[in-house]
Image (cartoon, one colour):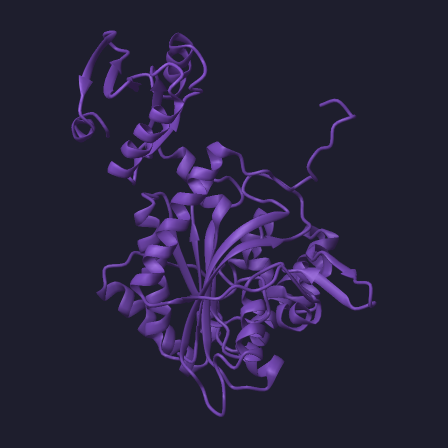
Length: 415
């Protein structure tokens, strides 16, 4: 593009009309399924105090160290564009007494909207991206974990997305993770030569993150130590056994995956990811888990919680690959009333009133009929609707026929 024109920032993408239809489809499915489960929407600001995320995400996570858009406002306060949804939802829920007021309130919320992270843009990863998330507060039992899994599976089914697998794991409590982290350090300290400087820093700060490394040498080395499940305390082990038993009884397919540990410090016990092999290296389309200690550590309130988040742009990439997804049918209404534009508009509005769920586009009524037909073929190559004085004609392009019909008869030709 010529340098004299303005361009979008790297990693920030315009949503063009041909992509907007996918967002509409996903948003409609989200509204349908959250209403079915009586889950309320909670909307938070895009801009938050940096402190909302610093402590909850963990000071050594990549998000806090490298990826947050942080700056000082005109009062010198540190603010940031939200990098994820959970911390903002927790802040709002506590600030507005939604989940605790002299006692625990059991609540279920959903959110949807843009998040921001400064990272290398690639397929399935942008610096501004959209997430749909679910957050359950006050529910400590395994049924809340299972319900979230059921909801995400239903959402994917509604969107006709099939090529994915549910991976689950339990990361126990902090003591379990510390013990397992020590085992990882012990074996990896003997193999430091295979680590990059970044991987060495991960080994020091959060060794469990090496479990989902793409480095084949690291995977081979760590395969020699017992899986994390063997380190779990009895309570966490029994809890995870019940989760897997419930999933089996419900006929929900899953894979117990020792490499699922999640990258944020606030998780405990059940963690989960929905993975696909259709998006290259960015294989997770949804992820989440329990975070029973987050609210206590940040707000001194003992509050069990669990949540999941879905990457909308990754869903859209999968929808685009789905040949079964049909485009919405569009119909063009042409003017053959001459200068009587009023009649043309009134009749076209009558058609819309008769078929409120369908899309009708008015051609330029001041153009010649031949020009309107030429344009209409680009929108719908099957037929167009022509308003001719007080009559409606159907112009079929396949055999170049046209005939008069009543508005009520249109339903025989509209998909």
